[in-house]
Length: 446
Image (cartoon, rainbow, N blue to C red; front, side):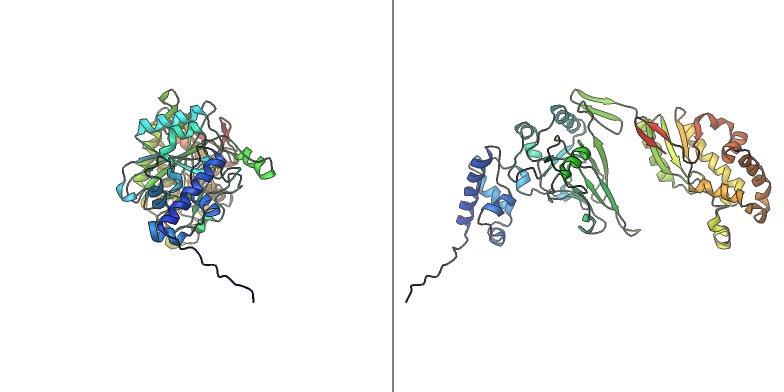
């Protein structure tokens, strides 16, 4: 009869976990060099990792790492211990967030520009990490000299915005694909990736936004020579995100990109290795206005942005709403009845339109306002072409015939009406034709 032996699993204790962590740390340093540290992923692959045992004994992997290496002089970067920001103790209001590709190098001017931003704004730098070409790739020594204490796996900015510890491969083509299903509606997430993307997920009217951003990278391209690697090289963005936290619920996020000299611009400031300077921007897109329906707070915020950024020109759309003659309301008696007094007739609406433009001209005499042709301006052209004014309010008949004549002469009827009635605004206003755009510094504005 053959002897049989029964193997008994070794009991996982505090001592065995500590010993295993140190063994894995020693193995990692031997393989990858002195600047490599224990990571949770590496520990899972190479150690006797028992997550439930670690959590039961230490509370978390973070606590285990901190306890094991606290007193033996080993430098453990926060990236590897999931050091989350406690949002109830909001200390910093401004953040610079970006990411590094493991094993890649960065440019010194870029690093120094970030440091200038940090100093000038009393900002907090948050560096996230991506996977590299090899699973155990570390960070370059210069990056660690400057940002070792700013590396995080995840980070809570406030209750509605966090950077996640999801590590993606930098050559991934669309890093935010399907991630809209992660996280609750009304909260937003930042993902470490060398592309800069943004996704807005639809939410209910009374909910906070649900948005996703990928960061861009402060390191140079570092990809395999494959199809996906070649595409990633083309789409690589040297940049980051500027985050302003208003309070526990509200925040602002802006994307920035580094220039060839390593500098970058945020709002009206340019940050470079040599310092911080003021700068006027070339142009700004304001979006749709819809004169007569403008929220006063929205206008105030827009004017404050223009005053701060001092653009040479702005691009706006749908300033003329055409509520009074829109084909959408042509047979809707209730909608017409509910129109406010300043939008009841076409003439009233045109005066409201011109007065809205006058606010910009008077507040910013240097500013050129480009009116982009949009679908609401087209409502008027359709109204004139279909001669619907013949069956409309009597108050609209005479003016509509006047505008129709301008249209038949190949002119912009709204522009011609403003020329006759508001000549003082004409020098600052430019009406773009349908399909017309303007190229500024290689960017098409339309």
